Image 1: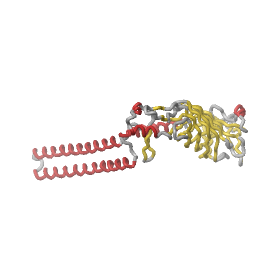
Image 2: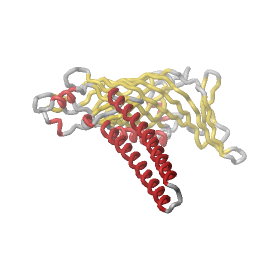
Image 3: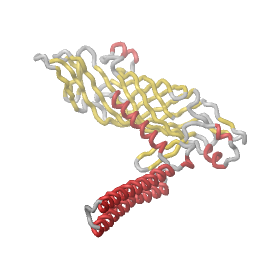
Image 4: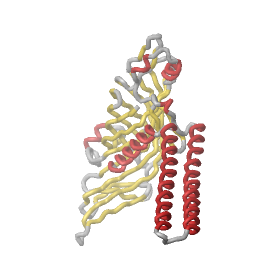
Length: 361
């Protein structure tokens, strides 16, 4: 699971880096150079063929009329190839102009912005402040720095996962699940909107996430479905792995206080700066489960290692909701979440998670 998440992060980073480099002017330059290359290659090839034909004519291997015929054929062939290949590049140029018109590709005029692409749409944002913002004579810069009421973040979290019985934290001391081996992973996007039009510390943060919650049973036990009940029972084999994984899609919502110091420009304009200091978020989430699987590994009586995957609902509640909170400095913080609805139907067992959260602004 960790490998898959890391691969996804690398792919996102690669896509982001490629999007930063791609601009309208650069793509036009590439097409222009490709047209020049195509023309040069075929002209050079035609010159070589003409020279070979002339050499054959000088050595009296062919007649003059045949030589002229071969030259015309070669010229017609390469002219046709140039026309064919250049037309492809011209089509690309037309598509590029259309993309520019539709806002699907950035321009060098946007070089102060970072960009990323989702589908066919290119989005612009500014990741870092720069000293050029002190140029108060630029109307464009003033307009740009005022437009910061809503920002976006990429969220990644991981940590320990377990359950409480009857909302009792003391039940963790006698948990049926391994405390350090039961883990969760979260991946998602959030939007952060300032509650007031004027700069302040209060924000509403909302978005969507995918959660991978893992529970590793203790004492050689595994989950067994018995009608509308799911019980932990001892496995006749010696288990080296007993893990129940449920995947969720959730929609988190938090009220956040961001204590980052605002920036004041020479024209007395005050602009928010976020994720530069301590942040506190309180809220909750709701969502639904996408699937549940149980992974068992053991060596059977014949000495064969068995890896078993069981796919079922295990009487888990489909809809889930709960409370969550975090305290962070800049983009890194501690993160806790607690399900208010039971993990399994007809039980008082609720999921609880504690870990580290990364908000990449």
